Length: 328
Image (tube, rainbow, N blue to C red; front, side, top):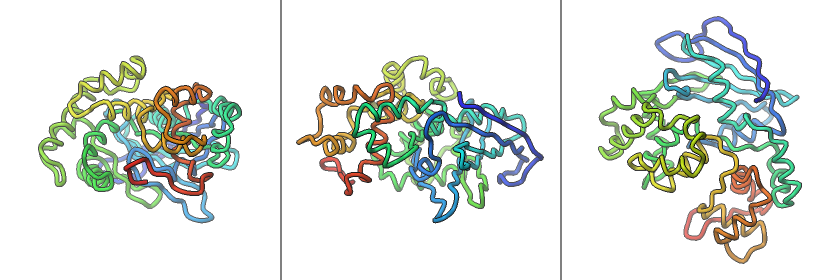
């Protein structure tokens, strides 16, 4: 676990709410390369990328339902010249700041030592070139499997951009809004509150029903990170498909981008396969067996390698590559 320092200050009105919030500060010292600027510009959990602006130090704003669903947190993050990540968290009184810090570390993949990922790049020159093109990039995750599952239901068979707006409005109306470094950011509703939403613009009855199913699964503990990690990737994906509206594609999304597993190989992402073909000089996207063989040198960070391919391939290819039949 990364080293952490945490301190508490006076009650603050920076976070917008009808109740007071406590301000907690913490520091995470990454093990291995990490760039907050890369994480902030990545966009994650169906969030817009954040841009610090030319000449400004990177700043990242997070707002989320804390693991356990009893509270929301707003967090401002910065990184110093030595690489340490400094956070200011705005929390309802009684919220465990250590739990918030641990969740932030998971979301930014800072709960891993990335030194071994550097060695992946040494074994595979293509990955090494990508690491050089996107130095310090680690996969940013959804805030939780719960939020990943809710997004899966929201976005199914609907345009992502449209549903990002619906998600933001739903969070404004029924979650909690924070003012973080001069910008408003709303955290998604906790499961108990989501269950009380009977209708919402842009969401039909079927979507509401399936969101309620996700909320109930969360309250039953079926979306807890620890429970899914204990099951392992394969069993966790199977278990998640018992939630109405979560099929194989979305169960994989929740496990890969919601739990923090670092070595799950996504074998059915057309864009990743198309980019892999370009990077490795293949005539066509690799078959699943070919992809698994090619990815062997990426262990134990196959998930990270695929995220890096998707995020940084165009930096060295010099052009965008679309999956067959898909928009870039």
